Image (cartoon, rainbow, N blue to C red; front, side, top):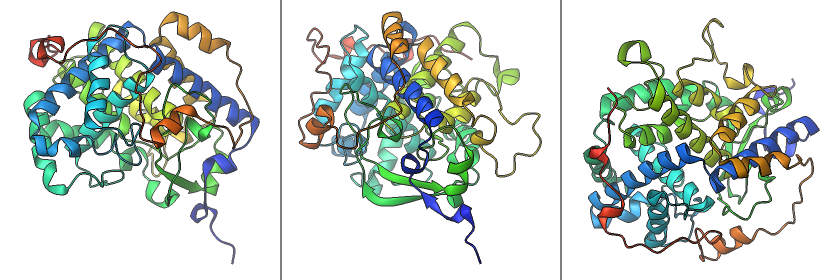
Length: 394
């Protein structure tokens, strides 16, 4: 009796080798790298507020817990693996200043930590990459986040989970995805990025059902992701929104996304997408539903019962790449956007290439932002502002 293809899993980059898919990979990677390298003013402001919140949370956390707070970003699977807490926080400080001194790796670090903070609050039980944080530290970290960002209370985070948990946006994820135990360094989706502006992360490699890989043109990487919800909830709360992440979907009850709130929402979504794509964690179609919900749109509205369907069933032929890439480009500084647009998609990838940033990270030498050093500033709190002093949306 033949084996059900849904139960046969393969590594996406080894099975999705068609030219059209690889064109989409390159479009995503180029747009993500451009945004992280040179975000536009809205994205820089959003990242700065997120970084300021992280700085305050780091100070609120007991000193003995600070390593746990940064366990994933500086751990074996993280974007700053092998790096000291001081070097990671220095990257956060550069982003917080919003003076142009932050580089792509700095922005990746901030988005990564935001995701970890959001995950700590949703507390789904996921432990991937968190081996460096003992379970007893979680309540202290959660309490520190609550003191700095009170809008992320338990009820609100339950709303976030109800909209964006990976089990919600990927209802068949448990059956369609498995993981290898090996930690595989990669850069960009399908490890096709040639950039040295980011350091390689080394997450466990995902394997996805052959059935899904064979019928979806959009590149897959790790299956559907709830991470955009966790990252943007932190960004929204840091910007003063009292309904972080969920405002778009709850607009008729709490006020719609208009003006500054919409601009902040889009910038936060663009940064989260750029981080997840640029570092090779999740592809455009995998973040698509969470990003759409952040902006107030249910991709299955009017499509009947979704059943086990996910974003790949409604935006799997290039639609997700077009939408997410355009979002990232709109929040990239114009000069960088023009350069990225001139890059031709590549349909070949060398498995033997050297990546200097990945080598530095592997060796524990992590100059998080070597490409654009900025003016030195101290770490006094006056440089980071007050979360509570910002205008809040009701």
